[in-house]
Length: 192
Image (cartoon, rainbow, N blue to C red; front, side, top):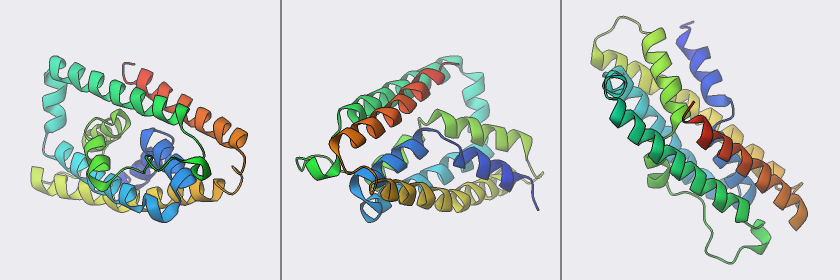
């Protein structure tokens, strides 16, 4: 077996912004309503991983100003999502304005997801198969999207199952705040 696959699976399965957001969305909005978010993550992750195979990671490393701007955008967006999750209410008490990520929002988020960039850059540099740039891009995109499909389904479904335990406003508040603190930590870790 190609060692790329276990590396990618562990990198994507471990807690990070996507895992936290998908679990919280599954818990708040349900599994079915979270599926567009899942699709967006799967597509976006494949695009970013493919881009690292084409060498965009080398551009980011060579351009510290661009890298810093990406970090600021990532930290700001993740912090904003953490605050929104902190303030959220249980799905039974929603006022109708709350909704899960759309597919496009989830795709766009991957461009500034620091954990994804770290895993994709490590995979591109540490597990290259000696193919040309387009071959590496395709190999990485398929590995990341294929494995992440199952990872996203798992965490979204886990969130939906958690909703069965979050049947009081207090239980939801504790869950939302723990998830929010995880996102807040991810925003800070962007700069480490």
